[in-house]
Length: 104
Image 1 (cartoon, helix red, strand yellow):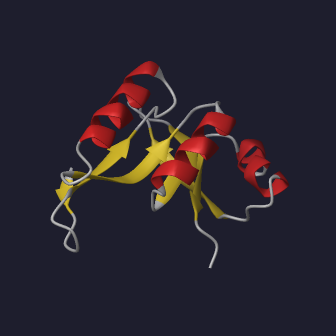
Image 2: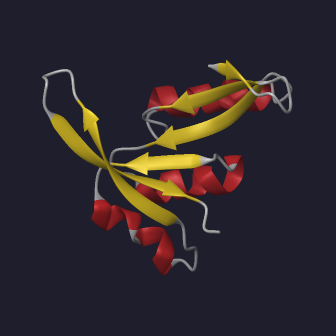
């Protein structure tokens, strides 16, 4: 976590935001909006849940591992920009993640 220069709040990135630990973390953040800011979210496959979280929390970024899933928000009338990035894994290989960010 890093302090947000504009608000003095801690910026939080949540990996696995749609899982039980991720949703519990968001619940804690909801109780302390003066202390925390959701900066980025990621999910493996629950794109509908991630999309709903993005609408609520308005993170600067959201990331998913499947480019096909990145198209789902566009079908709902939203048009985020998406770019692919290679991310190293603990096994020394890399996987490609699609990074979503708000459309300009």
